[in-house]
Image (cartoon, rainbow over all chains, first blue to last red; front, side, top):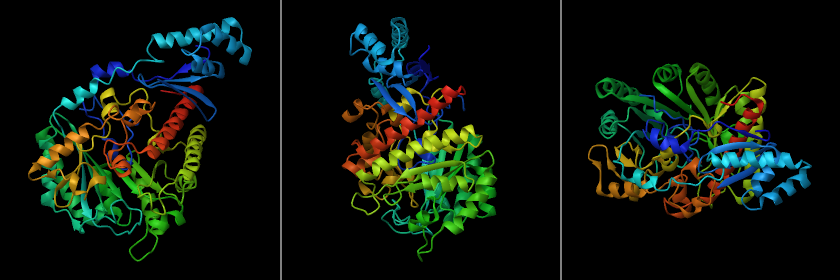
Length: 48
Length: 459
């Protein structure tokens, strides 16, 4: 595409099937503690 | 829903439901903004008139947009609402605890949401017996989860460092037999950091969060001893040594900004000048009538700071001196699945706070608020705790009408329950001020990603 750069992003529809394992970090357990953001969390499905 | 915005000279389109992100030139930006609202020929005429493009070029641009729509990457339909019910029906699993090992502090920070570590109660230290039981409680309630998280929090956790060491040793002992892996975090004000703390933390702590507000006068305004002496000169040398010793291990310098320093980039710059490269800076949590609570007038200043921060990140990346800002660490390609994006931080369900006596609360920000008491680590979740858990299970990206209209709902999962409760008296309410700041942060974070993509080093 000449005028559009699409960033590589995770397919959320597919993640319905391959997600939900719950192994990822609890968002407030890091440098936050006073707000809620999840988009900066890594998927850790393989981290078993 | 498609959200279009301009930040740092980049035109960006975010498709809410698919979380797709596109960087657009001016022609495509205009085309997307008109797409679906105006007849195709009218859009082409507008593009030709405004940008001087040919008919073929305008058609090419619209064809590219057609393709993205067909691929479900623009104007996609949000089909995830029914998945909320599936999430609510899942059996409860606890995977993270915030252990309040010390409800006391060697600093007396006026803005502390923990009321100088006491959380509206008595000063207290957690015994090893309570900590050990908390580890057992976590293992027993964690189902099939492998990775379990424990944050040593306070007050100041290093005022009870001996018990921290005992709890870690006990958890490590149990890891193999239970098939679990513990990840520990230490959140400290730095006053008691010494070689022993550094050596132990580098061996056992996955992450260390060091509290520093930036400029000396800003830090020392709030972060001072009971005797009124500022902490900056004591903690900065300790934090520098600690951060350097962390090597590749994770750490964050975490600051709080208030109405008295909404120009927090000056504080970020001080942190950078001190050599720190993993930073977090959070808006204060304070009653609206306090002199340091953020005001509507502060908002424009804060938004400007978030832009300056994004610019600073891009510039330093290009200079080979990158740094990390916690809220800008978007992982677009390998980030959270839809279930995480809907359900958020897990407070009151997957995540709980434990007081020095073993009481359970939905998270550290609710500790001491008796209506949210969920039971204790010895007897488990109480009858009231089950009600609290049910309320928190309902907090998600689709539980609030305001979120239906928000492009960022799958970036924040409906926001922080504690912020909502403080602002509205309802954990399922909306802290609108926080939402405004959050959307600004996300736009800036995405703009940093746009810069990477244009530069050609994205993912």
